[in-house]
Amino acid sequence: MMQYPQSPLTGRMMSQPLLISSLIKHADRYYGDTEVVSRRVEGDMHRYTYRDCHQRARKLANALKHLGVAMGDRVATLAWNGYRHLEAYYAVSGSGAVLHTVNPRLHPEQIAYIANHAEDQYLFFDLNFLPVIEAIAPLAKTIKGYVMMCDRDRMPVDSKVANLLCYEDLIASSSDQFDWPLFDENSASSLCYTSGTTGNPKGALYSHRSTMLHSYASALPDALNVSARDVVLPVVPMFHVNAWGLPYSVMLTGAKLVFPGPALDGKSIYELFEQEGVTFSAGVPTVWLGLLTYTAQNNLKFSTFRRTVIGGSACPPAMMKTFRHDYGVEVVHAWGMTEMSPLGTCCTLTGKHAHLSDDEKQARLEKQGRAIFGVDMKIVDDDGQELAWDGKTYGNLLVKGPWVIEAYFKNEGGNVLQDGWFPTGDVAVIDAEGYMQITDRSKDVIKSGGEWIGSIDLENIAVAHPAVLQAACIGIAHPKWDERPLLVVVKKPGMEITKAELLKFYEGKIAKWWTPDDVVFTDSLPLGATGKILKNKIREAYRDYKLPTA
Ligand code: ADP
Image (cartoon, rainbow, N blue to C red; front, side):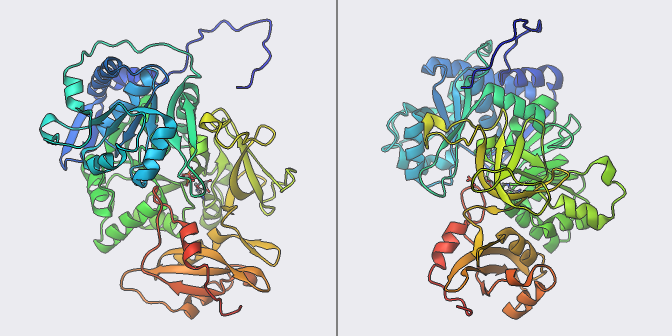
């Protein structure tokens, strides 16, 4: 860790460490009656308050102590968004151990690799993941016990898994007298592995300090803008970069919290929004596609839903417009990554934009936005030379800040920083006002005749066509141009469109040479464990594709 010079005169303010346990203490004391509502894996609804949550988190902290979990030990979870997962968030980190959230959508062998790499001591899981646990238990070398997050009557009578414990037994048999320990704020608090589309997954190890600073900054009005008047439903899973910090920022602000459990289809989400009066939500574009398809087919509107943060992959402008114009829901486009806790930028307007026309405002809001305070960014060329913020020059996007990783867990990958900056692997432009726009991931960029074609732009145009549900654009090898774009498209149910019609739709919207060389229609696109379209899988599937122009 970097060391800095010290002034001879030290400030005389309390040097209280920034610790995650302070959030749940605050929520209990000032918002004790505020509800946490969960759709459970068991199928029913569960409701209690922040006060109840704090009481059970203290009981769980005692149970962990009893199990021998020490400071710095890793405790894994394999769970959907729900109240027991929330209790584990606070009990594990609050007592000084490290919460390792594992993505249950990964293959059991990958889960076992991650658990072994992290040297997890215990693993807490939702009852529907018992078959996954049975598959990984023989491969996991360090896990001493598996805690099934359910009532006693749901426990299997005979299971192949040794040391299977019942969560509710642990809670019932533990005292709620627990004083959250004080320790150095740089202690590790939680661990999240990147999805590792290339190579083995690598761990981002967050600290109490980084998590707390991220929580303060992400709650700000021009970031997530969460307050005690909000009802927040995190659609983004608690195993995907700590649900973008929402389990922390709701306690910081006192917002009511609603958990969707495993039911992420449009109908279930819509019903929960309406039943619980949800005002704010956050997730990746593919989830919102499901919700918007459901509301459109059933001619439904939202009664309370007002604002959503969309990120994780580029939010198509067409989706933003539908939310705004058809439903009165404001979309805040956000960008970040596992290595950044995750928030880097959010896109909102400033006072001086008030006089702009709707189109001019929209043009800005489609970008990924300006850095939230704490994060700094720059774009550089391949030699590391800083590039101009003119909205046209694109380069490799680098970031730094107190919630950006310095190195991966166990120093995997070695020194990853470039002169103290973290290279994000994204290619972006930044305009004179500081609005950043991602043109591509560097590995997805299409290189045509020595120039780059941004695949995100081409996809955004395709999904703006009323007959297109989803689109992915990939580079196909070309004898003359090196690569040329191929557009892979899923049509909306019951809609028809031809290749010629879709290519015509590009006319006037982009430089002519950016137009895809070909279009193929398919039934579905492969999605990764965090709900993003898997471009590498598509590239593999079309590796030998012959373009008509080749
Ligand atoms: P991974 O997908 O590798 O597991 P993350 O979930 O951390 O990891 O994804 C981070 C990446 O997702 C970013 O580097 C960027 O490429 C992409 N991303 C995130 N938000 C956006 C956005 N708003 N627009 C475009 N790309 C985005």
